Length: 137
Image (tube, rainbow, N blue to C red):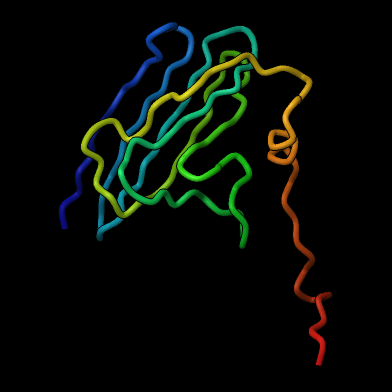
């Protein structure tokens, strides 16, 4: 088994000192694990969208039987508070040939959410406990 670790740093070209994306990946037993951090150097919260550049299926993290709300396909979208860092990660069976992730968009996060999809993404996912779900005979 070979372990490979590549360190990538990608900074948004418009504002190189404001939003920073750092990523690395490891590969073992046919699975690539990608880890990234997004740092917001601005003094306002920023909604950041990150996309995978890997040509292959993205296996986003799961919370129980459901996927994490911030993930949609091969993209993560979340709010990074002022002068803070957030971590993001996923797995895939594909091998990256370049930076595994890139910043797709950055915009100032507002208190008001205008899009239906964004409202739904903010809600916690839930399901009834299996102990109270009764199957019909």
